Amino acid sequence: MSTNVGSTNMMSSWKVALVLGIVLGFVLATAVWNRNPGPTKAEYDILTQKNVELQQQKEAQQIQFEQLETKKSLELEHVIAQLEQKNTEIAQQEADYEAQISELNKKQKKLSVTQKKLDTKVVELKTTTEKQQVVLTNSKELYQQQLQLQKQVVTAKSDVKKAKTTAEKFKQACDEFKSGTSWNWVSQADCDKYEQRLDLVDAEEAKVTALEAELEQLNAKIEIDLPK
Image 1 (cartoon, one colour):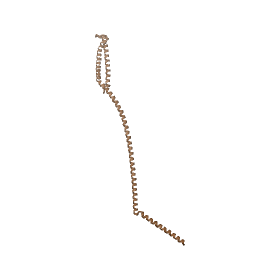
Image 2: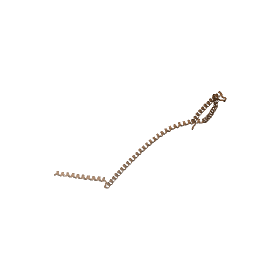
Image 3: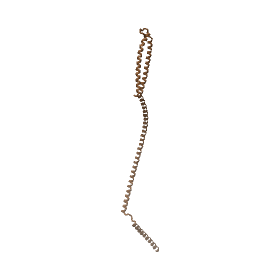
Image 4: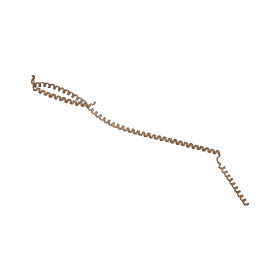
């Protein structure tokens, strides 16, 4: 009986302690809750809305960043393309300039050769001019010589004609003497004079031949030397 009463008292004490512990825990929890109360629904909604807005701003900024990055990438590609195009143009210009320089060098060489030819031609013309000047200086003398020779040829031919006429007279007398039938006074002297006249004719003809040859040489010299 005493044992049951003791057991009952012990169980009651345990229950009381449990209840007291629960009550004490509730009191402590209430005290803590009252000291650090959680957000109200309105505050929670505001925080949620701000979180949504922040998330939207973050997404918008991310989109802007991606757009900016894409734009910069496109701009960079455009700049690179422009640089490559410019490099191509510069390379083409360099090739054109080199071709022009090469062409100018060729023309310069041709001009140099042409200049040398012209210099040679100038020297030749100068030499020819000097020769012609000498000939022109002496042209009066040449023409005077030509005129003098022409007169001498005419005179020599006239002398030949006269010598032949005179010789013909003595030939007739000589022929009569040789025939022995002439009534005129003829002798061997007529034949001797005839022979002398023939020698004179030969001498005059030789003189004409020599003068004509000299005149021909002078005419050839005038034809070659005198400028046209």
